[in-house]
Image (tube, rainbow, N blue to C red):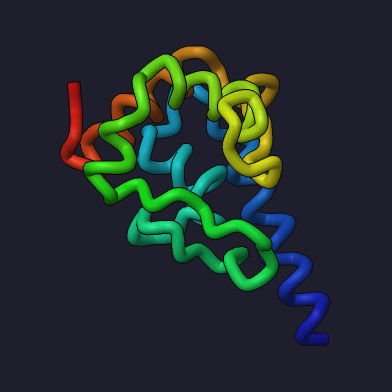
Length: 118
């Protein structure tokens, strides 16, 4: 019975998420859906997937590390995945999932998170 309730709740969440258009999602929500599992709620690379990963995800709060990456590099990493920018192959490609506007918004958001904005 408990598993059925969990499955029903998960289905409800998916329905509610699917009914929200890309335009209606805030960048924080986009980050929460696509990035938090690896990069963590605190954006510091300590997400729930970390124990299963061979490479620690990037700490988005690290101003030095993040400041060393250009907006173009961050955009390419989000769009084409980590391998495209000589980073971890575990960073997925989001270019077919997220809109160009969302990706630009994520780059801008990451600059706010690291306090290394341009």
